[in-house]
Structures are given as C-alpha cells and as structure tokens.
Length: 77
Image 1 (cartoon, rainbow, N blue to C red):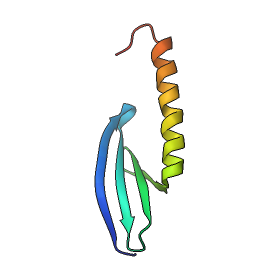
Image 2: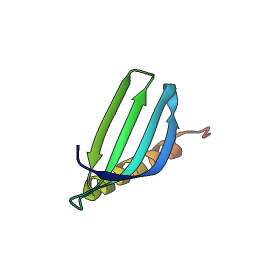
Image 3: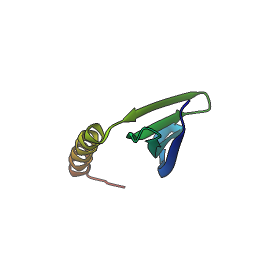
C-alpha cells in the first residue's frame, strides 16, 4: 500500500448503530480523495473514496433531500 496522509474530517453517529467517518486522504502521487467509511455494527464496513466533483454532487443531492424532508416533517427534531 502506498504512503498516504489522512486527516479526520468528521465522525457521525447515524441511526441504527451506524457510524460514518470522513477522511481527507492525500496520496504520495498528489491525488486527493474523500474517504467515506461506513460501519454497520461490528462486522460490516464499507469504504470508498470519491473525488471532489463526486463529493460536491453527492453533497448537493443530500442537502436537497434534507431540506425537502425537513419541510415535509411536521415534528422536526
């Protein structure tokens, strides 16, 4: 495995015992990706890395969904 520099960006506790970690990963080659680690319980872990364009697209879609969900929920948290 190549050398990489990781910076923790967020640790999110999600419903149903899930945990989401976001890391800024910089590789020796200069490539920079966002690593998303999703842990479900103790045995299932999903890891994927995305570029800035994908992260921005995903963030926009999630923001739109959250706004619509908040507007439709008569009893927000």
